Length: 240
Image (cartoon, rainbow, N blue to C red; front, side, top):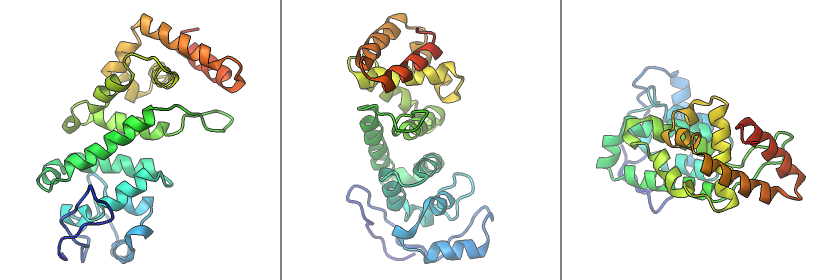
């Protein structure tokens, strides 16, 4: 290894330099693949590269070798570059597998804080994309974080903790919208929602559901796109 270095972020100081080799502990990669990865600069790494590096069970390298690339992975996720949610999913599992080493290197907490900030920020607004079947912007990122945090023991149900903090007493359109979106996922059988104790409790909370309906229907008046979206969503939840 080269001497320790700080790479591209002020909050995340990785105490490892660029590796001379990627050890491929699971013997899952061709030597040519690893050589190409090593030859790339950090800014050249795409989603496929980062997913190889941070595979949870078959990473391209040992912990110290992969950790060098953490700032690029976080930057890729923050900028929401192509397939960023796949990178995020791999990284969350890799962090879970390597939590003790990350804590020792003072990396686990700043990584958690960064992703917590992203999650909170995403929940502060609810905007639909312009596709024929509208989908909430950053919906995949929110779900990826929520599912991993609630599923993996190291995160101690952090997803539900943050949902309760951000959404438990809805008073705004964005809060009501996210609750309705999660309830739709619950009633549609999505495991991330059905495995959430908080979302499950929302499915049985009729006063909360009524408050959500009132906020969404009022916000949709005069907006055909929102009316269509929420009428369909609330009907799927059995709320209309």
